[in-house]
Length: 349
Image (cartoon, rainbow, N blue to C red; front, side, top):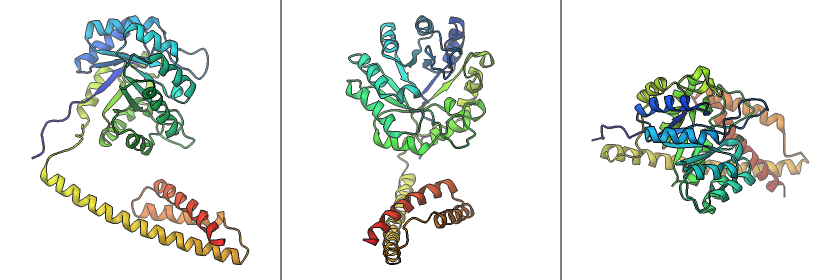
């Protein structure tokens, strides 16, 4: 039979920014009472415009040390330069994370990785602001190349030009692809920065756990409304405690015989469907080559955008009627169309 107990959740929590020794200690005490073992707080805060609260800087390292002395929690903060990294090593921080804006700059990432060389401090790498999987992967590789072994990834969502209820679009498929590329490193999701609004944190947290995330990084402040940064996305410790009780923490696997048998059966169905899709794609590309030959014979251009827009409109409608996500269907068929155009080019030769 299936085990009855839930997995032990791994949660990193704490305020967006360190503001005062009192703020950190009061928040940390409440989080410790929830059973949370890792306390986070930003000391250096990158801001888009000058004049805003950019953090307390190195002064806050002593405040984090006081949190560890009193609560026994591990402490971590964001580093955005080699100087930050050196300060954190000197202060004996337990772990650090690399922010989204820093991840987007390979020069900065390399400098930070070099500063950490020989320390093997755990480093968590957030995805870059833009949906660029290679930048994310490259940043992770830079830390490995400098001899660090305790590297993990944090998925915090991406900036896109498309409307979204969230501050940063989750684009879960990119997180899945990164996990496939680095299957052996911990994968943590930051629903606070994805959401930008505390009302969305629960749904994003649950989605992350459903997809097999190893843990969550959630911002929590003892008085969120008074926070100097990102107050809308921070939960009070009481709210965080309620959230954690309501989440369903998923297991990585099960030894239940019925489950394993049924899973194998369903996977076989998927394999059969995938084989059918491949056969249909091969047929479609052959037809595309034939269209290319026909257009060449009649001196017609390959790309006809009006025709493709009409096809996409029809596909989106059909997707909605069959319960599929129209945006997913559009992405898939745009890729198919791109390769079909290439096949038409071959057909005209």
